[in-house]
Length: 332
Image 1 (tube, rainbow, N blue to C red):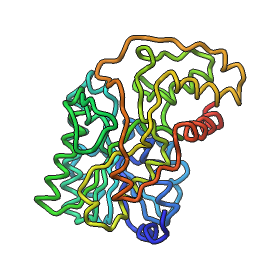
Image 2 (tube, rainbow, N blue to C red; image 1 turned 45 degrees about the vertical axis):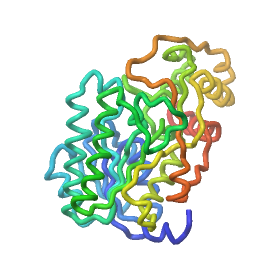
Image 3 (cartoon, helix red, strand yellow; image 1 turned 60 degrees about the horizontal axis):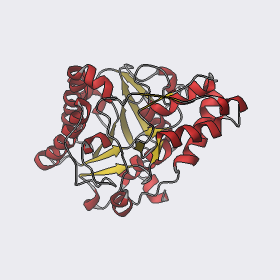
Image 4 (cartoon, rainbow, N blue to C red; image 1 turned 60 degrees about the vertical axis):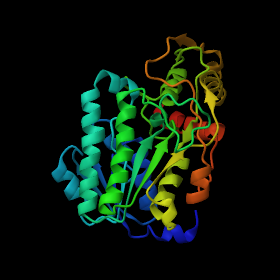
């Protein structure tokens, strides 16, 4: 990124909610490397304390253990902050179908608490994790920011409501916001365990154990898989962009390419077999499609390129190669 933009973050006070999670912890590390003063707010419901091992002793890092559903905690966390990166949420479409009430409490009520706290603390900008699930049943590809469909899950509804609330807080209160619609983010520190583990780390761990991963459906469903370093770049650009036309917008945060699940497993086997040749022989199985899943997802990133100067540095193969190396070194 341009040196001038990065200098804006030198000594800036930045709150990262969900900072012990996969994306949040990577953002904390990057910001601290730029000499920002970083506060992490997390209740460790889905994040992990070990994700903070690299930063916990940094004198510029502060940890607040708390829940965004607690308005007083949100207020405390926002005090004196220049910027907020709001990553805290309950992810997962299946989780939201199983427990829509908790998903709504965290993703809507918690989000509103954070907006109010950021407004009252007069933060300069509130950048938040939106979601590609907002596109719902829209058929057009690639997905363009101003054309969405009907949401297909409680989770998707909550993330769309976030965008509506952010828009209102700019219009009514002058709070500058930018939403980043994440498309299937993967990379280092993504949790491979649990019922709602993302497909890439879950499959990686299964391959490493010589277990057969199960693809939902026939494997033709496709996604715009996005490596974590592309997402970090988007967050930094959203924090530092100076063009007023770029603020109070939502942006696809992706690569602009799609990979189906059969191709994904082939790539994973290829890269993992460099460490363990036996992985080439592990069979891939197929199961039923998952309720609430959209068949295909592909982002247009033209808006982010034009207004934020975004330039994704990793495609699916180069990102997977990096991610597989990290998993092999850290989790084998």
